[in-house]
Amino acid sequence: MKGPTMSDADERQERLTDEAAEVDEIQSGEFIHEAPVGDDADGGSVDDQPAELGAPSLTAALEALLLLADEPMNVLELAAAVHERVEDVEMELHRLAEEYSDQMRGFDLREVAGGWRYYTRAECSPVVERFVLDGQQARLTQASLETLAVIAYRQPITRGRVSAVRGVNVDGVVRTLLTRGLIEEAGTDGESGAHVYVTTSHFLERMGLSSLDELPPLAEHLPDLSELEDVLGTVDVGE
Image 1 (tube, rainbow, N blue to C red):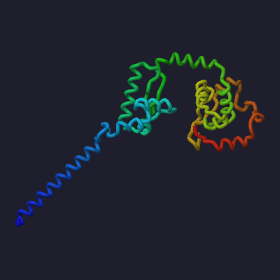
Image 2 (cartoon, rainbow, N blue to C red; image 1 turned 45 degrees about the vertical axis):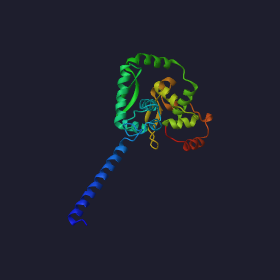
Image 3 (cartoon, rainbow, N blue to C red; image 1 turned 180 degrees about the vertical axis):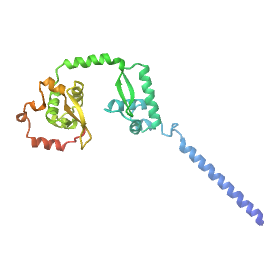
Image 4 (spheres, one colour; image 1 turned 90 degrees about the vertical axis):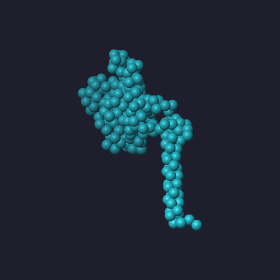
């Protein structure tokens, strides 16, 4: 039969053995969590990354989002959209901007007002200016004339409301009218926060008017105003 001293020593030895085994188990678990088999260096599954990203690569995802954006997008917005780290997104944006400059593309990527956006390259301004000026001489399409009429008679008005009246998307037409200087932004809508548009002095000049009061009445060509208000009230007033 073992004495008390030997029993205490055995208990201490057993405790130390158990603690060492527990530490080994925790360390092994942490290692597996940080770099499981089949995962990349960032801890995400290589097979799952394309599905989560929704694009062939981070570069492609950022380019697609920036081409879609009407206003500069900040790094946080882009990182949230592509499910990537802010640091990785910011590094890729700077790399893209440098690549476009080195290759002298017709556009470049700039960080402006806390966000990133595509712009035409300064060296291409002559051809862009020529194209815009040549376009000024062309006649407005029927779609442009209809959109301009809606803005003229309903201003200030958002693109969403113009689309509701015409029944089609008017984003491209509005950009054309902005480029020609016939309309301009005039603040935002109080409810939706969307940009509202009004006609310009250039519009009056081209129409031969001194003020909007001289616009010809269109009552006989329009639906009842109460009906029109009902239609506009049922649509999304955002852009």
